[in-house]
Length: 70
Image (cartoon, rainbow, N blue to C red; front, top):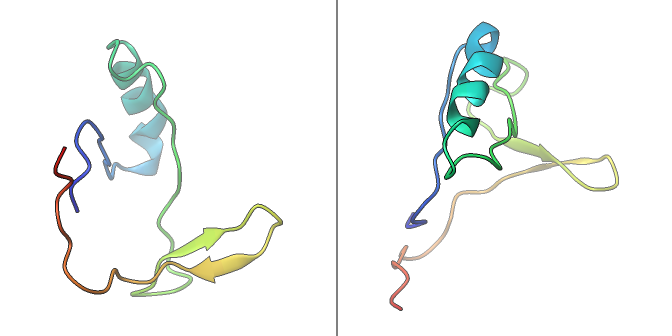
């Protein structure tokens, strides 16, 4: 999926805070956050927590993934 200027990194849990600190040292990463974690709870599925505290499956995109043409 095209999304220029973004980074999604998977790191070991015990190294996440150190990685975040390094990324935030760059002006491009000063707004970086840890946004999730991997677990064995739902193999093969991605779940997200909703604003009201529920959970829902994050589905795969359907159709063609076209890049942004600006």
